Length: 249
Image (cartoon, rainbow, N blue to C red):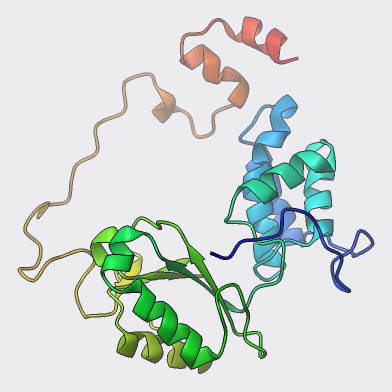
């Protein structure tokens, strides 16, 4: 099964000297991210900031982007590298415009994921872990993506395409080549066999009505438009504001 390298390998567009900086729009997002945490816990924003950097860079994380995140949150770069190498959601090497993660875990395998894998490899001329020469597609086999009810499936970028067959897989690939991937369904995924979400052949049989959320307790966060992170412990009953503020400092 394919996987990323554990250590950094210099390439012409990914060295310690490569330039990276966030856009003004993304700096606004960074400020919103950091506002969720006390000033002495800025490192808590590393994961969402890495995701932001990866999206800006086109689906992968150059070394310079990780260094920039480390500088913003005030930690040693190694602390950011540790996060980026631990989570498989971060790509430290370039991937195609359509990054396909094919689930090969038992439910998908039993339902035909090996056939889907062979279909993708034969149709695109690539193997697991490779990218097409035109830079459009990258294929990577991964472990469970949590869509077992609609196996076999792939995650392509942020979207799930489920209930695949070799025929619908080729149709999906050809649509992507034209720049017109099928739009997502109502529930944020697209079973390629015409069904809606995880509904069976009889359609929806449960949760017919919209569920009602429980009411917020009186005097809780509902009365605040924006909660100061420093006061969270007070609302949770851990002490007075003065005590928690002193500890935070």
